Structures are given as structure tokens and as C-alpha cells.
Length: 498
Image: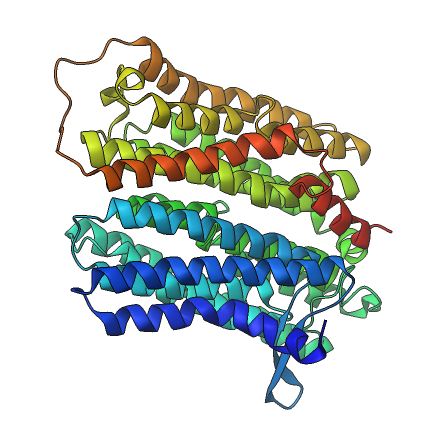
């Protein structure tokens, strides 16, 4: 591929959604056709650009955009195997979520504002995915906070402002801690770039104590967005946001950006060998394991559908931290591939929750009785997502738990199996009763609401849910395919554990 194209391609991938966002703001509220066209064109264009970049990476090329900001500090957007995993997930789910959001907000207000910030949010997420060093990651990590805040408060209610305020306090506070850790690390070692196996891999251990403290600061900075205990409390309160926002927060944007950052710090800054030498893996496993069980227990007590899903996210995203904390190639594969698996399953669940709320006024679990008879396709998608979260084959969640369990045994952490078994039982305890209500209970005499909806709303929302549910099932059924997320992540892990 032409060297000029390799230079500009990463920037184009990031900026296409930013340009769409600016265009949407300029189009205003009344020009709905133009807004829809900009949304869909930019989403498709980003997916095509990511595809071209992915082919370049498969061909052994390394697209990279680099611009000096300060002496020794560059803004770097780079395509490598790990960034392409997250970028592809983001591009695919942005397109599907765009279709869903257009239908969901068909009769809503302030759609230009929503879709403008929606596009900027995707820009920040893609910047996080493509960041080639800590400084670039931090810039887009902060932009992600600022662009998602208007989405959380979109409804304009008192609850929305309260939830957004909690979100902002948590994420900006964590960013300050992250900044301290980043500057300290740079001053100590000059290390910034993400390199497979770790930038610090060859570092002598005379800085042992400082490197441990810096690691703690970076984990706190990432851990808020990744919803690690005790930094998770903002997430359930942010569920006042519209369903498309909740889906993005949990599946690909904020929560996943924090988890992706943890992977970058562990694997590409410190590296598996240094993590083991400093004894940092076990504390991360303990925190992640506790968060997995804690989030599941709290999910049991939630009567609101979205809040139950929110606490499920607190639990499920920690599988990623668990895998990279365990270490070893098998567990690392399980942790990293869960970036994709959790995203597909959770976005399907939130899409369905939004459909139930938007079309039938159902927001509570005890209102789901018999809804499978009224909305069979939506309920099928919800069931696939729920069974995947429990870890039943052949849905994607089974692959994750299998690799985490096998990886834990491989490195002598057999006790982690107990966490996985307890988590699975808890997952079943808070999802199976919901499925029982959906499919086996008699429907009510009247639903909470039964508005007249357009064909666009039904097809757009249900169609999007069917697509992501099919993907969650497909990546489990075809996990052995050469282009599956599992095989892609196996190749990534080979770079960490040659």
C-alpha cells in the first residue's frame, strides 16, 4: 500500500465521524433527511476505512499517523492487531447502533444535538482504539468523557442531570489520577509508546516501588470507566440515558475504553514479564474477581431492567481484567476476546430493553410476563444475550469462560475456577427468572403502554437487535474460523508470549 495512504489512513478513520458530527450540528433539527444521510454515510465510510486498514495490517503493513505536539511527545495513531480488534468492534456496532438510534428517536426531540455528540463520541472511541502511546490515549480518553456527558443528560430530566453529574465527577477524578501516573512514568522512564510485550520490558527493577505505585494510579484511572470495584457506582446511575446511549456506554464506548486501556497498560506498557516480576497480576485478579461476584450479587436485587443489565456489566467487564491479571497465553486470550464477546451480547440486551420500553412501556422485570408472545423476535434476541452472559454454549460467553478457566489452571490459579463457577450460577440466578417471565408466564390483560409506532421504528430497532444477537451467536459457533475474534486474539497473544 502507498506510504502516503498508510500515513493518513488512521487519521481518516478517526476523523470521518467527527466531520459527520460537525455536519449534523450545522444541519440543525429540521433537516432530518440530511442528518440521517450523514449518519449512515459516515458509519458506512468508517467501516470501509477500517476494513482497508485491517487488510493492510493482515498484509504485514503498519499504518501510522504521527504528529509532534511537544519535544519528545507525539500524537500517534497506529493500526496494530489489538487496535484493529477494538476499531472493528467500534465501527460495526456504530453502524448498527446508528440504525437503531434513528428508529428509536423517530419521534424524539433534540435529535441534531443527540446525533452530533453521538458522532463525536465515536470519534473519541476510535481515537482510543487507534492510540499508539499513552499521551494519545489520554487525549481521546478525556474527549470520550466530554462527548458522552451530553448524551447521558439528553432527556433533560432531574435524574438525567444527577446521573450525568455523578458520571462526570467519577471520570474526571479518575482522569486526574491517570494524568499523575502518566506524567510520573514519563519522567521516570520516558516510556510512552504501546509495544507488544511492553515498553518497560527491558527496564531494570531499580524503580520497583515507583513502578508499582504508577501501575496503581493507571489502574485507578482506567478502572473507573471499566467499572472496577469500588469505582463502579457511576454506571448504574447513568442508565437514565436513552437506550442507544446505554448500549454504547456498556458495549463499546466508555466501559470498554477503560477495559481496553487496562489491556494496553498491562500488555503494551509494562508487559507480562514485568507484571509477573513486580507481582502485580495477583492484586488485579483479586480486584477483578471480587467485582465479578459483587456486580452479580447486586444485579439480583434490581427490579429495573436497565439497572440489572448495568450491574451485569460491572460483573462481566471484569472478566477482561481477570484474564490479563491471570497472565499466560490462554487466560490472556480469554480476557482480550471478551472485549468483543461482551460487547455483542450486552448491546443486544440493551437494544431489547429499549424496544420493550419504547414500544410497550416495559421498564421493570415484573412487567415482562408473556412478552415473548407479543414480541417473539425481540425476546429471542434478549434470550441469546442472556444465555451468552450465563456462559452456555454455543454463544460467545462460553468461549470466554472456557479460556479463562483453562488459563487459570495452566498458571496454577485453580481457585479462580471457583469465581467462574459462582459467577455463572449468579448469572443464571438473575437472568433465568427473567427468561421464565418472558416465555412461560401468561401476558397481562393490558401492557403499560401500547403506542402506535411506525414501520421504521419496528424494523430499525428489531432489525438491529437481530443483527447483533446473530453476531453474538455466530462468533461462538464459528470460533474456529480463521477470521473469528478468537483466532485474531490468539495471534495477538502470540506477540505477548512468543
